[in-house]
Length: 296
Ligand SMILES: CC(C)(COP(=O)(O)OP(=O)(O)OC[C@H]1O[C@@H](n2cnc3c(N)ncnc32)[C@H](O[C@H]2O[C@H](COP(=O)(O)OP(=O)(O)OP(=O)(O)O)[C@@H](O)[C@H]2O)[C@@H]1O)[C@@H](O)C(=O)NCCC(=O)NCCS
Ligand SMILES: Nc1ncnc2[nH]cnc12
Image (cartoon, rainbow, N blue to C red; front, side, top):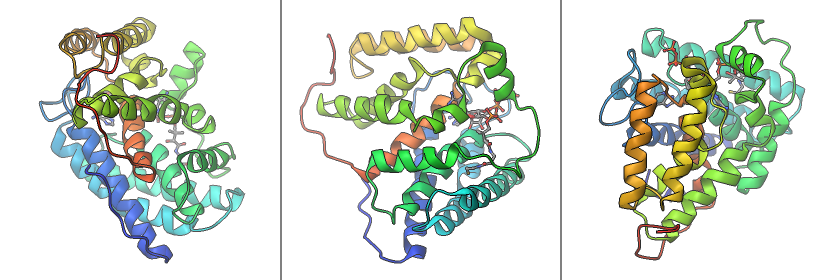
């Protein structure tokens, strides 16, 4: 995603259009970013049997009307129960559109949740919120119960209960700390250190993967795979990030380990797309010329 230079429309439809374009671009840019360990990227399907880049992009595009409606219905409204119920209904409709577009494969359920809440929050604030305000408004919606939610026991709940860890719901209720406190600061730090845009984005992914309790990884590889992911992603950053030869080598080692564990950090990928989305709200240019920000 190039730095977004959006005009400042003052009507709800135009902003909903802008926000939905940005949400879809964020998903497509996330899917194309390479090399991502375990995930679908421009090289191939990672640890997945049923996914491809073309499918991820088709899924992302199918979600444009969903993000548009979420933003439109949230325009300058407070995060109350009436809005919570409405975005729950629109979000579930979006999940159905995604399933229709992919022939029943779950490509973006977690992303609909994260980006849906953030697009809605941005619209609640009239399209002019800061990162902190957007995240806080999204959290105020996420914490509200949705009485119309079907009582199904999800894969995410299976992992959060078995391992007693936070999952997608808790990340949103906490105001997306992996996005606002880890990925966005890392993205900007790496850019300032002179990393290329792809490397800065990969570093942001590493910042998420270093601590996220990703229920996709837990379901596929258990706690051992999650711990290996945390250590491996932290090692990439300690080595100076993916702009450095040592960081690149650590990334390759992490990928080998994740493929051996059949593990894919789908939750981290969703939060990276959310990072791109929020970066637009306060984007700034990079300056220096070195590719490493850290100890190298
Ligand atoms: C709150 C919901 C997200 C539901 O959450 P829950 O945890 O109950 O259920 P899941 O259906 O398992 O979805 C959670 C998805 O969130 C992503 N995720 C995982 N860990 C985290 C985390 N710590 N923080 C943030 N996000 C996280 C992840 O999504 C990605 O993975 C999906 C593929 O998953 P899966 O099918 O399990 O994976 P595979 O390994 O490929 O399967 P197999 O091949 O093994 O079969 C993919 O979708 C990515 O996006 C988790 O999967 C929310 O959905 C909800 O309540 N929705 C209701 C509607 C609503 O209220 N919407 C309002 C806003 S629009
Ligand atoms: N690039 C990706 N690969 C696999 N699962 C994902 N979920 C969201 N983005 C993904």
